[in-house]
Image (cartoon, rainbow, N blue to C red; front, side, top):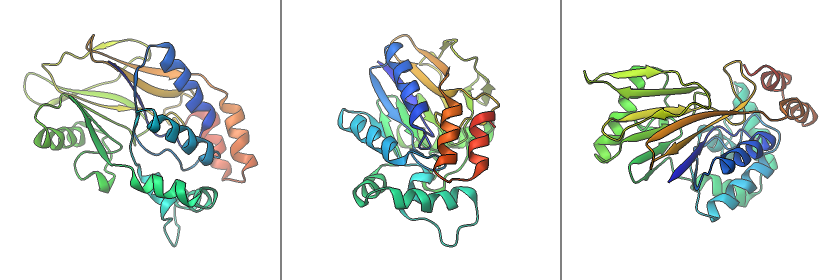
Length: 251
């Protein structure tokens, strides 16, 4: 099984199409969309429609915090994501909003658990951004399902892998895009797969990961797409200029 893991799409249809095309070329035969399908970006209708088609074809689709905000926008809004949640809410149909609200927070796919944020109280949207938070998420997963060997999430918009070393503590590893990483099943692993629609590490390319469970390999990918056109679409939609600049800079 080759499981493509895509997170934080953020209503960026161009980036999503590029990653899907790339993953198909790599032989992906199973799909997991790890939440934040919408928010920040200018194309929520198109992205939700694509995700619905994938779900109907068997893909796993999770709910992220921006999906939840698009269903019920915070009042009053005080942060950028909260302001764009109202804009997104008004562009989605009631059926689309109900579909987003119905999505699960976690799913187990045999030895793999997928989540948007942390398995430790997933509804709290905790960030997995260091060894401590990664250990808590992994522990919460294995407490529920001892057979879980991999926890795959998003939310932080960066690509990072953690593994449990011989001493029992988690070790952090920064992957090189396109280079397969051996992930033998006798260890436990937790990763954040990056962002399709809004990278924040200084690289404008969209990010996703591919887990090959037959070869015991995990590959993090970066995919070029027309990020300049995506930024123009943000401006054309009347969204915050800072959101367009973020796509142009990757930060």
